Every structure is written in structure tokens, then in C-alpha cells.
Image: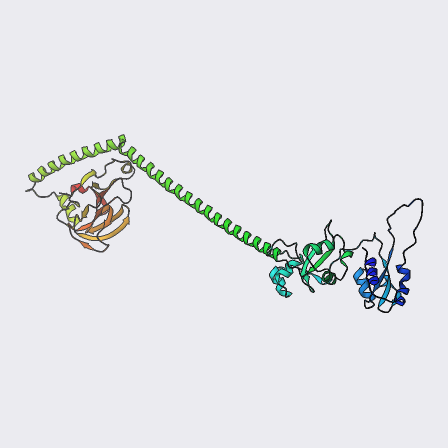
Length: 441
């Protein structure tokens, strides 16, 4: 039923007098029937004109706004008491217009740092009302600067766009909105809206839409938290694998060192060295026996002038052996190892286990106690003599200290250039090295 027929039926149903009907008789009379042998229907693309009957209180400006036309397209035709008749010239059906939008809905451009909650608070709106006119939002948090947001300044409700296959009346019925309130909120008859226009449905709240966005936000938060925990767990697994790899590498390295030690322990070179030490020990035992016999034979004889001069230079009647238990492994000027072939061996080497005590061979003053030419060594002087005790593991005296013959100086070690724990004992008279065995008993 058309708008005109509806209004006319309302007028016919009301009790009116003959004077009331007479001015409208030309509008209510049925049009004459046209008789023609052939009827061809064509689309009217020109101007359309409609006669409107109002209650007399509606102004021309209100009618023009309601039908979306200019004020000049309305012409008053007259009327009766309480009734007015208007002639409305509608735009051609082929005329294009911009999609309609309720005047009470304004546009706001998003600024950097804006959030939906912040924009709603700025305009004094509940968040659900702001979402109701922005159904294209996909997140409660992400807002791109420059994006357009709809802001309701009048009635609150749901702002929907009419899609193909829909009409304003079907949307009003589908959402259960009030027809009159919808027409007032949009300031246009719903039947005048077409596909592409936006329709404000007052009183309809987007609570389900807001809840869906809130659930999506919570799902995204949980997904981000799960991804963070997964990344942390993967970092832990990487660290654990690296630690296990380092442990295995250290174990393999220790095993390799042990195998190298076993190979050295059973090597022909070591066996030859052991045999050489055993021959040296036998030689030393024979030498010691010969020396004992020589001392017994010469106990009543005086010391030779050269030996007397040497003993006088040491500050003692004679030198004492610096160790109680030892094994002579290298003699004065001997070229028994590669290092002694490259550097003159100016003393004797007395081998013993780590920590074996070392004693002063003569009275004197400690001039050095620390690391030097022979690793950790102690130097003592007396007169023109200098005694050197090298390769110690620990010293028991300090520089400037007076020591007496037999006093503890330190302990056997293998510091400096060393092939095994031993004492390098060296005697220098007036800066010249001499064979210590010539001065020892």
C-alpha cells in the first residue's frame, strides 16, 4: 500500500462533513480507465509528482527534510480545516545521491594514542553505545590514526548499513525496533532508504557485539601469554641442551687427556727415562760409597788450599746438603736433557716428591724470595758466595731474613721451566758458578 493510499484510507475512516470532503474530491475520485488496443509499459525516468495530505501542523521544511528534497519542490495546493494538501516534485529515479546517514551521527577521526574506551569517555558515552554505531570494529584495542569513528549525538542505538536483499523495514522488524522511533531518529521515512544507506535503530544495544570483542581480546591475551611461555620454555630447552653439550665436551676432553696420559705412561720414551733414573741411582749409590771411603781415608788430612778458599767464600766451614732425602738427577754442566743442551746447567738437580723440605746449605742473608729465573726460588748470600735454591712450591723465608745452616727455606716443587719436582741447587763464588759437589761433604 502506498503512502498516499494509506493516508487516504485514514481520512476516509474518520467522520468528516461534506464541506471537508469537497476540496479533496478531485484527489479521491478514481481516474478514468484508459482503453487502448495495445499497452506498452516503459520505465519513467523523468520527474515524479506526488500529492501529500497532512494534518496541517507539519511545516514545509519538515516535509522537505523527511523526503530528502529541497524546499522548493513542495507546493501548497490548499486544504480544509485541519488538513493541508501539498504537491511534491520528487527527483528523477535515475538521479544519484550519496548514501544517507542520520544527522545525529557525527564522524570523528582517530588521533595517535586514542583508544575506544578513551573516545567513549571523551564524548560521555558508554562503550557499548560507541560500539553500536561502529559495528565494523574488530578489536577493542587496535585503532589506526586517521580512521573514522561514528559518534552518536542524539538517540543511542544500532547503526546498520542496508545491504542488497535488505530493506529498512526488514531490518526494523528483524531487530525488533520501534517503527515510529526509528523514523524520528533517522528523520526520514524508512521506506525512502535504499541499499547503501545507514539506518539507526534506537534502543537496540550492541551488548552481544561488545561481549564478542571482549572475548576476542581475552583470547588474544591468552594466546600472547601462551606464546611468551612457549618461547621461554624453548629458550630453557636451548640452554639445557647447551649445558649438556658443554658437559659432554668437558668429559670427552678429560677422557682424551687421560688417554694421552696412559699413552705417555706406557711410551718407550718414559720407560727409557725410568731406566736412566735407575742407572743414575745405582751410579749415585756407588759414588756415595766411594765418597764415604774417601772421607774415611782423608779425615785426618787438611783441606786443600783451593777447597779452603772456596769454603771461606761460603761463610761456613763447609756446605751441608740442602735436603735429607733426594736423588741426584742432573750434575753440574751436564747435558742430559734438551734444555740443558740449550742453556748451560750451572748447578745440580736433586729430585724428591712434592713438599719435601729444603734447608739452608750455609749461613747467610736472604736476598730474594719469590719468582725469578728458576720459578719460585730463594737466594742467600754470605761473603762473596751466592746460593740459589730453585723450582720451589712454597718459600718459608722472606728477603732480608738471616738464616743459619740447616734452617728451613721452603719445599720441593716444579715451578718455572721444570720436567718434574726437584731442587735446582747452584753455588756462585764472586759471580762465577762452581760445581756444588766439590763443596758438599
